[in-house]
Amino acid sequence: MKQHRSSILLVLCLAIAAVVFAFKSDLLSQSVGEALAAPAGIELRAEPVPLSEADPALTRVGALKYLAGWALTSPHDRFGGLSGLTISEDGTLVAISDQGDWFTGHFNPVAPQPITDAELVPFDLNMPEDSKKGFDAESLIRLDDGFLVAFEHRHRLEMAKPGGVPTPWAPAQGMEFGGISDNGGMEAISWTADGQLLAFAERGVDVQGLSRAWLVGADGIHGLFFKRPKNFAPTDAALLPNGDILLLTRFFSVVDGVAIKLLRFKAEDIRPGATLVGEELAHLAPPLTVDNLEGLEVGTGADGTTLVYMLSDDNFSSNQRTLLLMFALEG
Image 1 (cartoon, one colour):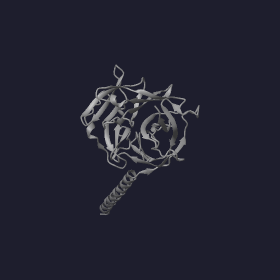
Image 2 (cartoon, rainbow, N blue to C red):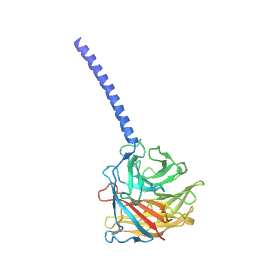
Image 3 (cartoon, rainbow, N blue to C red):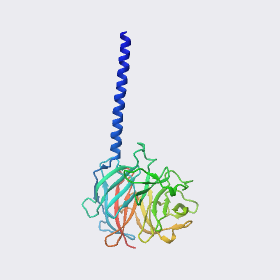
């Protein structure tokens, strides 16, 4: 009889423990979800950098005049890996990381610390903890209410905004990526002057040395080609005020390090079936200040100057830097 009562008590204790554990687990899940849903303010430091450490007085590279630049650092373990960049007229800066985080802040280039109110926000609260392949964001451009974001690995375009729920961008649903590797998809995207989307593939060159690009608009999806500089790959694109397109391209080798070429395509050359051959505006290579530049933005200064911003992806590596560089386009 005592053994029977002991068994009953044991069952009751286990049942109560299970209820308590489930209740606590539910509270923990809710608190984690709430923590992820809320923007995380982060400490950010910006150290000024010259265009050239070897010649700090140098301010000119090709058609670009160097205005300012900073190396960005933060103790937050998810800061870094930034690709894509937008800076609004009111100073709102938005970038996105290749591990699934929005990076936002207020940008004022004449302030002692040019980026204030810095925050990290998860791109999607339902993303798995290991989010690299599912949320490898490479480029973003503004929409009327949010942003259009291009992803590699699972090649796609999604409409999203910090704190919002991402949704597929319907006009791109028929895009074909056959023959393009997981990490060779849409690395650079931009709007064109007539409101179409122009997208460049990072990898894949045919026997003629041509890479794939796409135009997506109201009349469907059209292919075109891009003649890239030898050993350089697209990393981001941006629309100029006159309708031309800037394309940032990157070279890397273990021996020579990183180099960047900035190209320009004329608006009238961007059409279905075309082969785009860019005009080289600038070539940045050591000893100039350069890193894995993957974000490109264009703005207009108070005096009408065309401003060009570049942002680097440090790949969360201590051997690389997150650079934000600011130029005036003169030519």
